[in-house]
Length: 253
Image (cartoon, rainbow, N blue to C red; front, top):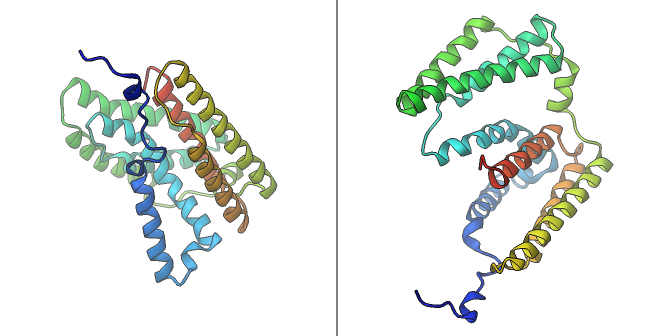
């Protein structure tokens, strides 16, 4: 085994690796195209706020799908299962007059059981996940229509309107943005120093911190030009932080 010279050990990767951000560049390109086609309407604060709110549902499902994809599996039933759980939540809250907290707990438990059912067939009966989740897609969708009789269920409690439609106060949004930026930068600096103490090559986090702070400031500014940061977006960010911690700092990752 050849000895690694000190010069080779200290070789560092570029401070900004463009390969890691190709999806970001692609997203920016899409935004530019739609901005041109819509004569600037696409980047209006109202439209961006609506887009962020509408993407929360997909974002939450995507967090759960990450582990499935990492395992080399697929889940075709995730949308139908989410729809079934949403229908059950509405039935519990509206038809059975349960409190929002109890409705959410029961719905989460049912969703967990149905997810375990899919996983059991794949993990212990060696049925391909494509087949299992394709069946689940049809079963869950049919179950929702059967339980709800195909009708709209409402109105839900004000709590669900608050977390699903309302906005964070603009001043609170600024405070939250500053707090998130500071916490992110502190974590990056601590991680950088820890790697240096262990003798691992690591680039200073100043570039990442600067980019993140600029993005946070721009996001808060644009959202405050409308009604403020949507509450659903905050919920998505909280779940993202929890998922990121579990997947990188715990044995489950």
